[in-house]
Image 1 (spheres, rainbow, N blue to C red):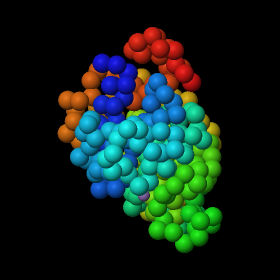
Image 2 (cartoon, rainbow, N blue to C red):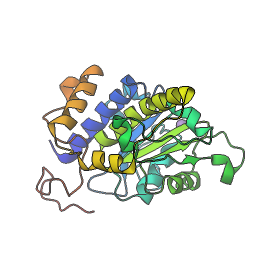
Image 3 (spheres, rainbow, N blue to C red):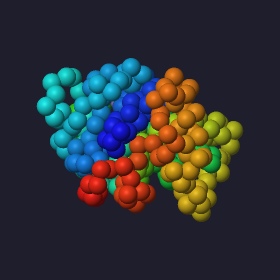
Length: 265
Ligand code: MN
């Protein structure tokens, strides 16, 4: 299989995982940057992630429009286009409405890492309020101007909350953005529970850095989570050989299975 085939397979698996772990339901989506054309990305047509199959995936251009495909895309595809545009280091993006994250979009107390598995949130999570710049809307990100404003709020971080709506998360690979999106609601749940009983102690900057330094994309520990989630989601037979799911940047494996194309980024 080519690198692109592997990535698209991983994108299908990621759709199923996010659904099975209750990060998304009928709504919410995940995308991956095109490995050979970094301005483009792949994402499903407008379909519930649990039901997404390989043939549902559409290629999108940098403006968030489908490339030679007339099927209905997700309305909020501009979240993905704008984050890919703003962040060359990002290769995978999730947008979801996970309920446990929503309170932190409404209050002054920031969502931040309070448990070890939440360390990859990175720090205090900014909240984007669409109303600040765009006034009264239906709260959906339906054009590039709104997407870019959200991407600006995300900045160099991994996740931004969207007031009254959900969150957008970004990472260097599919598995990293899946992991972040799965543990974000859990961290939020624990933080909220702790806030009801007292003042939570967040992870320190040093602890967050130590966790990040210990992460290896191709380690057995990383694969263990991917294999577990995929099997729980009923697609354990799709995941192929142990590797670095959905990862295609050049730092990790220059000689990889990319058929001799030099990485373009
Ligand atoms: Mn949404």
